[in-house]
Length: 279
Ligand SMILES: NC(=O)C1=CN([C@@H]2O[C@H](COP(=O)(O)OP(=O)(O)OC[C@H]3O[C@@H](n4cnc5c(N)ncnc54)[C@H](O)[C@@H]3O)[C@@H](O)[C@H]2O)C=CC1
Ligand SMILES: O=C(O)[C@@H]1CCC=N1
Image (cartoon, rainbow, N blue to C red; front, top):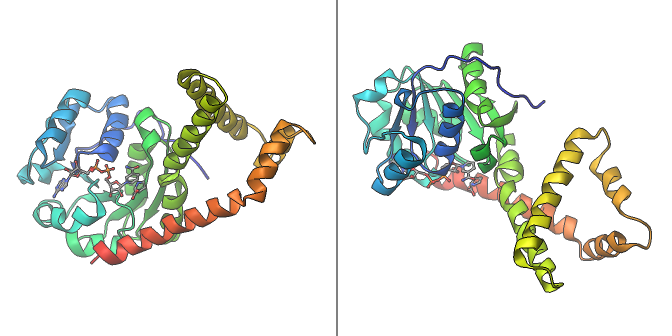
């Protein structure tokens, strides 16, 4: 079940560990909901990233963990999986009473709990369309997270788009392969469709516009329709027509099978990340 956040949420003080792409997407959502930049504490060691946060979101960030973290009731972990363990050491002592939200791919909540000394953890897998309020996020809560904690997470993540809860933590690896990495698949298709248009004589600009609008329109039609993607596809595909020629070639080349196999690779990589960078 997909949901969006309730409106008129009052957000408590929130800290972000890591102020890169994903953190910025979530902070942008919070700011759109009316959270003042001054209510957000960010630990971000790299100066260039701190300047970007200031310029884009008006947020002042700190280069290292300080006692300022103690006021945070929610700590959002948005560092790379390989940086998580090192980042946790200086933060943990200040944040044991907070609720924690990790967006790191692969890293299990068992690892996070061992590093930060509390089990009040929600693990999330967002995606970059969160930057424009069109994100899709998978969420998993440990049993130690109560209903109020889950409601807070729904408000924070809901400010970036839609979300769905999974009952088994391992399913977040599937979510990672599907919607977490998924925007990159869309962009790869956009690149290929644009190139095809150029090869057939269209300008790059016009070709890209056609491709982007086709993805957006196809997605919107699927979202609003009660019919399956297969039926919607068949509606476009006149027997012996142009679409039939393209789809038949894709099926003969086993494009769907290759695509499914590629997503298995992403899921497997998420599990490897847990092994490589977990506790
Ligand atoms: N980019 C994406 O599409 C998605 C990313 N994720 C996850 O989000 C996490 C962050 O990814 P991005 O935002 O793309 O990476 P990013 O590289 O843009 O941001 C990570 C930030 O963490 C900072 N950092 C490094 N060491 C730190 C430390 N010790 N303390 C505090 N901050 C530190 C870096 O300077 C950097 O600005 C990753 O774990 C990734 O798996 C999840 C879903 C989608
Ligand atoms: O590629 C990655 O590892 C991260 C997780 C999902 C999207 N980006």
